[in-house]
Length: 163
Ligand code: ZN
Image (cartoon, rainbow, N blue to C red; front, side, top):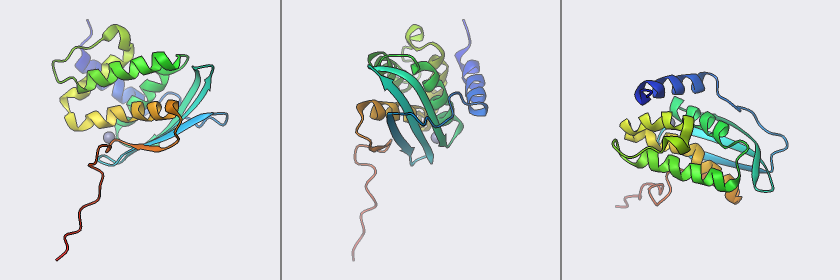
């Protein structure tokens, strides 16, 4: 049994230092951008989707180690998967990082992604870890909009206080 906490540090360091699939795909037929204004994370995701299979995936971006490592891990995990399989991974990942410190981790479904469960100890970083997944969801849905982790009304600007 691996110590997930130790694995978390190793995996984040490794994927941040040498991100997998860090490239623009000139033949991408799906792209989406994601931002996490709370942390300043930004990623652009490129997908080649053929017959519901994610044949190739690449990303570019900048931001904290968690967001970039999560993007790197995600691209490695969803490459070659069907949209349905990628969606299942999205839900398993989301449940893991938002499930609280003692939530269940579906290690069998998540594989290497389970290493990111360590992010649950840092609630402010959960959005960083989720950003690439929300962006993937957007790219697969194909609306082409920029996604922000600040959905749900909290991204409205400060109400001007007129006097
Ligand atoms: Zn971040």
